[in-house]
Length: 154
Ligand code: C2G
Image 1 (cartoon, protein in one colour):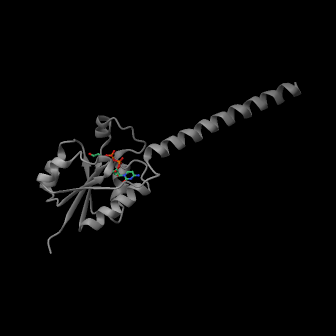
Image 2: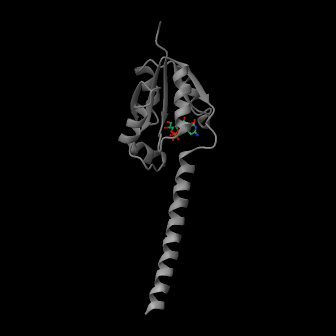
């Protein structure tokens, strides 16, 4: 039975359930799932700031049971070469990329799957920023109380 190979691309920063559910669905589309993880340099090119460095993001994706191979994504243009090099049958992305890669239909099937709602790396970063802001305000309040206590006892 010929192997059906699926290929996808992504940053996978702060790996979360949205990434996992996508990889799980991509795994079910074929027999072999290849994931191209955006390198730190490529993310600079994409204007995407990441928290987790490439080697850790790639190691996490590689450890996912649905994933058979991880390759670096270094250039927008590498998709054509990758599809040919790995005999890809299905190129698939989340639907936030709907239509962006239709030109690849000359080489293989192109599929856009619904994103998982309610979770994104951007949301996680915003929550983390909120926590650090609250912590700083709490620390300032505690500092003011300590200063008042100190002057009361002087
Ligand atoms: N995704 C999802 N549900 C979410 C968040 C992300 O299905 N809640 C999907 C995205 O649609 C994408 C994949 O998970 O297909 C990886 O998302 P990102 O890490 O944000 O990848 P991105 O920065 O979109 O990089 O050349 C293509 C780019 O490298 C894609």
